[in-house]
Length: 115
Image (cartoon, rainbow, N blue to C red; front, top):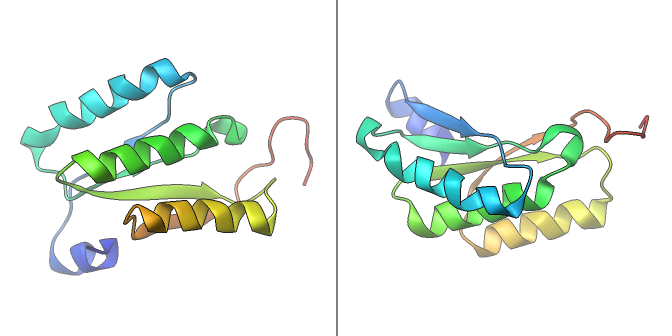
């Protein structure tokens, strides 16, 4: 379901997850998502890491949540510091996993970059 449709129907409850700094933390994020089920969130969002440092974890958490959770998932996509091809690749992978909701942002440049 698209987030815009959820917003049109109700005042939603949502949670936002920040990806962990290491792959070891992915399971903890997914466990937390499971523990929040009693609060009946309408959707959850997964941010990009600061400076894009955990972009792969954002994608992994989003895909795993989409596969296993009973709640809609929205991925953040920060475009700065990525080529058009890289952005399209992320979008293709998310689409292939059934992720329909993406918030695309310019974002802050990764550390050490100015553009």
